Image 1 (spheres, rainbow, N blue to C red):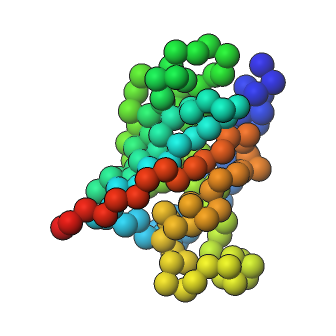
Image 2: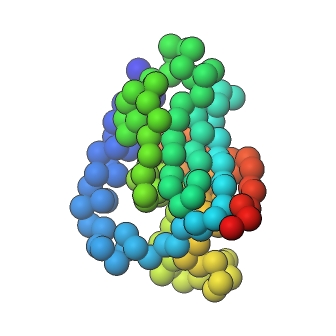
Length: 146
């Protein structure tokens, strides 16, 4: 019950922050098109689900381990355990893990050639979030031959 309250508050904060996002901020990141990237979302040693970038599209789906348990509730942004979620842009649940590239500290930590690469930034900064208790791990990288 406590986790559900935390996640509900995080969702509300996310909704508030999204109101202030400009179109410029929405399009400031580049998403690699000819690559396959995978991340695992983990909570208390349980793989909650997999976030995949394939052919420039983001996909999130819950793991079988998560589907077969009843202790942990679904993520508010992804309420159906059986559904595969698809998006042209990174889901807000995950994009909150990436700090704004305009921040001076971020500019000092990230080389200019990848400052707008959404996958690089998610790998570098996405493991932890102050908005929720989940951890995100990059698990695989394969480049397609175009």
